Amino acid sequence: MIDGKLAVNPAFDEPKPQHFNYDMVDGIDYTIKVSNPLGQRIVSLLYQGKEVRENQSFTLVMNNYRAVGGGDFTMVPDLPTVLEVNRDMSELLAETLIKHNVYSVKHIENIHVIP
Image (cartoon, rainbow, N blue to C red):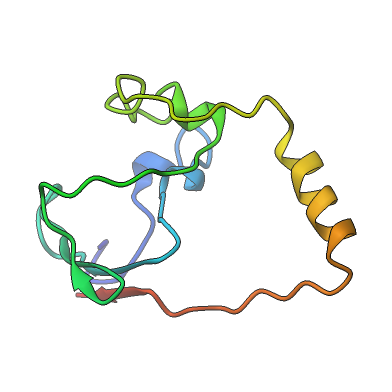
């Protein structure tokens, strides 16, 4: 928050916009309390309607930039790689769109931000 209003952290705007560093995982419901200190802002994290527990393990799909720790995600490169696909994301998306003539995306309100 800046001057009591929800805003993008200036660290993600200078010296250039880096809004891609606000990662969210599809299928997860977040409640974020922006007035809490850094590292304590996620006040609820649900997967399939149940609170995510600290000892739970998940398999995530991510691009190479994030997998090598890009964006200061230094914890990621040490995690095991389950499968590596060496193809461009744009190529994979194009194949999917060609294969499925009609493709719709259902918007899900899974991110809740509170002051």
